[in-house]
Image (cartoon, rainbow, N blue to C red; front, side):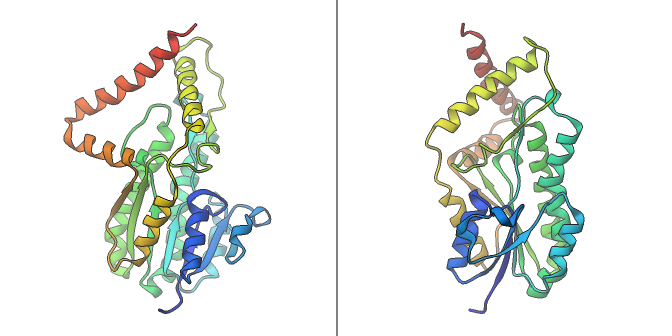
Amino acid sequence: MAERTVLITGCSSGFGLGIAQALAARGWTVLAGVHDPARAPEELASARLLPLDLTDAAQIAAVAAGIERLDCLINNAGYALNGPLASYSPAQMQHQMQVNVLGPALLTQQLLPALAAARGRVINVSSLAGELGLPMNSLYCASKFALEGLSESLRHELSAHGVQVALVEPGGFRTRFAANMVWGERPLAAGGPDALQLAAYRELQAKMLAGPGNDPTAVVDAVVRLTELARMPLRTRIGSDARSARRLKRWLPENAFTALIGALFRRRLASRRSRP
């Protein structure tokens, strides 16, 4: 098989690091996008490190200018802004959308000639939150919903260039993603509904972080399989939570599904309030 080249964003940890290692082991030339190459993990020793800040349009353009042919682009980098909407600063909201949506869109645009030259593919790493609006995650969900719409549109649009587009939607997995979450920085009124909801959600997150979590290898394996398929499906959902949420959303009437999510959240909030 001819040598293939992949650019992966967000390779410092988590899914990105695992995908970079797996594809390198299969003979791919890996271009690993990292925020700071000086702090890149040793596991990326065989990759070509690219300094890549998805909020820096000039840096994105410089990276793309150095690539003439690209078989696969994996837009993996991203993070979650958590907490109630009232707690988000304007700068935090802008940064969330920049990293999770606008950066991947611009990188894909800049790399389109290289992808077209190879009749390559784009794999966008979305989330369960790309199909399900979750309390305390409004801007993160908005960014992933936007990535879903972008990917669906580009699947049709880029086919004229011979470029395939697909989405990967993981549920909850054991990576550094949860530990890297950002919380709203605006102060909330003590004892108000937003502060109470935030306290309940922080408690839930602490319990999730303390648990064993799901092995991220399943996500890495799914992405590797997509790179090898002749024709990628639009969506690949990974994890029982992602698949179950999708089935419930499809089977239940919209009002019933929305009520279910609300009831689950209120139950969590009520249990928090009932404690001394």
